View 1: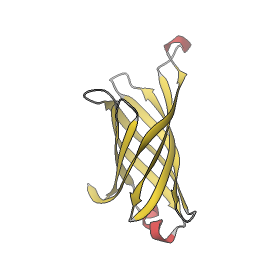
View 2 (view 1 turned 60 degrees about the vertical axis):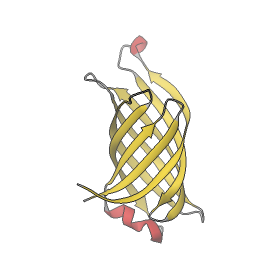
View 3 (view 1 turned 90 degrees about the vertical axis):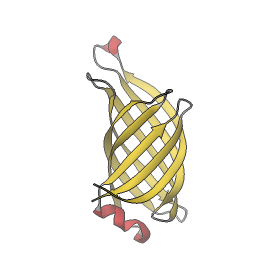
Length: 136
């Protein structure tokens, strides 16, 4: 069950590449890197993440990735996660999944204790909206 909204981030996909595709005898696999800014647990943060998406036979993509959330004073949170993304109406992608955090930043230590459920929207021009929720 979704719990409290932990925060929201906005940013942009800053890099993309094809890792493998049909010409290599397997499913399409893409890599993307995004950078976003916002507030998590009331803290101003920057989030840099790279994720890989692999085509699923039934449609959409399975995604797996890692990232780092940085505070203005140099604190960091290391994150790993996975999810599923589907094409969005009008182009772009919509993704849902979970992230898991490791940090020693006092104001963000709560992230160590809960799975972080995310809702990620990527528009056709690469703009990112990322909402983080506590999973209860």
